[in-house]
Length: 171
Image (spheres, rainbow, N blue to C red):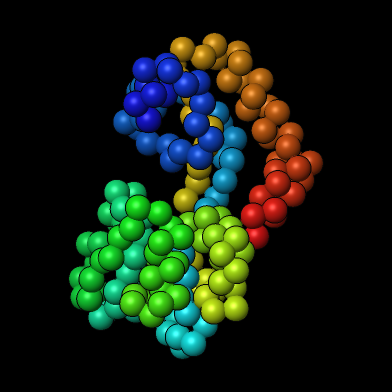
């Protein structure tokens, strides 16, 4: 985000919108992604991790330093957090049976399950813990007319199904 704030880069696709960030960045009005914050678990695990209470006594891995890790680490009763520098490491630890679940957004989890060929051993739970909304976020140095043009193009891609076909490649 520092690079965006300083105008070294013009755009990040996939940032949550907050009042604090709106003071220093420009946002497109079109939501780009709606990632489901969810859990990956071993297929042999019969638990349904439907809410925070279902995590009591469980060991969780998430992306170290991420909002996902921060949000989940404060839950009362979890056995522990075993965060990693990347999601593939979390999935490897899960596949080895050293943790109970991996918590992150479904786009990344599905992508890595496919890439790592772990779909026969690990699956996502049925119900996500929560859904976020991500937007395109622009440096204040970008001309507002340019932001509006890009926003319109993104809205057209969503309306025409192009964005869905792009995202489906990750599943």
